[in-house]
Image (cartoon, rainbow, N blue to C red):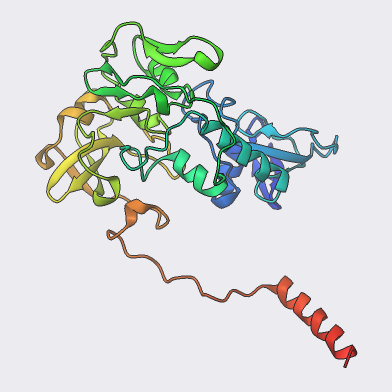
Length: 336
């Protein structure tokens, strides 16, 4: 083991991490399906996580010193790893069943307006519902509804879609000079809002749109212009005095429909960008093109844009199934 590092096993895969690393970030070092989903956690935002509960995992072994399991499921974004810890994510039926319930809870008030939502095609809640959702809801009461409001001259708030992940509040609190919006009310009447409409006005307010995991905050300059899978993302940069100037341009033909920050494989912004780059620079001449953005072939955004790798074989080798078939054949032979 590397000096100073500790070992943790997640779904049977061993990884060495620095002390103080959370289970979530340890899983991200492994990558793939082992990584728990996250709707509220954002690695660059201090204090994020622990609100949506979608990242719950099972700790089947606490550590080498104390191998007792943790009796309840824990939030992986808030729980630090211990040396010798064993964690179950997709290998635990208990976790998968709990995640179904959490998705159902998140969808209690969330409207099924994906056909008109600008976030459709790159929505974390859509992906979560596809993997862990159930076909029907058991909720029989009226859903919460809110009027759409403008919280900035270029930002539209659909509070009906909000899942109260607090990401937008943390962005405004941590990367801007002043925060003028937040969570009003308590319990089931909580809502993200401002006391004065069009109050959000600062150089980095547009990042609230990028960090929103659902379609609660939308870009008014892109609103209803196109579906994301009909656009082509291209990475570009410019010399900007306010931010890094590294962005993704979303093209339809030769027209730039919108500009967003570049996101990593976990859907988090690599760097926050200013509103000047986001809203005011929508001509190709404003940018230096770096090349097409890499998109996962499982995403609808890749449709018709990128070559897919060779398709997986229709028949997969299943050693366990082969062993069971062999046993069944032997039993059948004895009965002859």
